[in-house]
Image 1: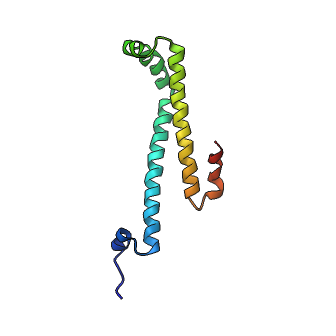
Image 2 (image 1 turned 30 degrees about the vertical axis):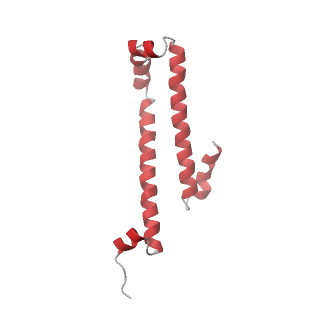
Image 3 (image 1 turned 30 degrees about the horizontal axis):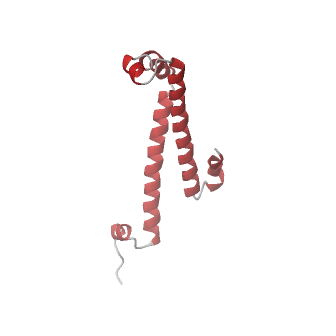
Length: 113
């Protein structure tokens, strides 16, 4: 029997090696998306961005009309959003740790967060 081309094995699930490579590519795409979200979160926590949030965004007339004029409440809500984003990032790291067989021992600590 003739051997199938690699693209045919990946597309139709023939052969174990091709299926593992496809799973690795999907995992790499998910890791890249998570890293992009983390970089965005990191950049939003810079001194310049926090200053812009406090000076421009929280004091905007539209924000005051829609939500509140209480600066401490608005800053508390913004902090809650950042903590929620960080929690989602830790959840992603925990999922990656359980899916990655080589780093299983070192990445399972994120399950406890």
